[in-house]
Every structure is written in structure tokens, then in C-alpha cells.
Length: 150
Image (cartoon, rainbow, N blue to C red; front, side, top):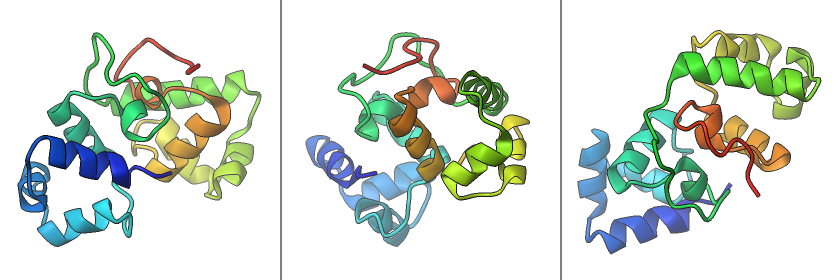
């Protein structure tokens, strides 16, 4: 997952400082700097704020697609994201334990994601989308189309 160039480019194209973007996210400049350098992975909640602010898709931000944005895009929906993660897993004939193994996490973590109690972590989302060519925006409930990326 390499989004740091996109993050820097978006900030510079919009003539924003790191402090400006940190303020948008309601975090410290230091925390934001760690996102830009990818010392810390940006969590879904901050990714969503940035994508909404810059009017771009999560797929574009993560380098999964050249589609800058999708029509009828909405906010991340934890319940819908859980349902879609479960549907994805079943379509690919994976158990929670098998998906957890692919993602190097616990099956209970997958269960909590599928129940809509927690959002999937950014690196896990990226791994699924990259490996199975599925849209992050779709999985997170932000859009209904496209489901799969070309």
C-alpha cells in the first residue's frame, strides 16, 4: 500500500500545509506527518474525511483505481461494510478463519468486522481489494458501483 505520493500531491495541489490537513482531521501535525511518511497507516475514519474533503474515492486514494470519484458516493457505513465483507467472504468460499489467515489477524476480528462493530483496518481492506480486485468504496458501503475493479 503506497498512498503517500497521493496524499502529498492532494495537499500541495490544494495549497495546504500539513497543519491545514491535520486541522481538517482534528489531529496533530506530527500525527498527520506520520501518515504522509507512512510511518503510521491512516485509519479508515481519517481516510474517509480526506476523501470526502478532496472529493475522491478511497480506491483512487489507495491506488486501486484511476477513478477519481464515484457518482452517488456516501459515507462509510459500518453495518453495510460488515454485511458486504461477509458477502465477499462467502462469495469467495472463505471461512472467517481462512480470511483471518490471509490477513494475518484473528477470526474474532473478522467476526467483529462482519457484525459492524468495528471497521476493517486499512491494511486488511487494502489486501482484500488488491488480491480480489474489489472496490474499497464498495466494501465500505460508500458506493454500490463498481463492485469489482477493472
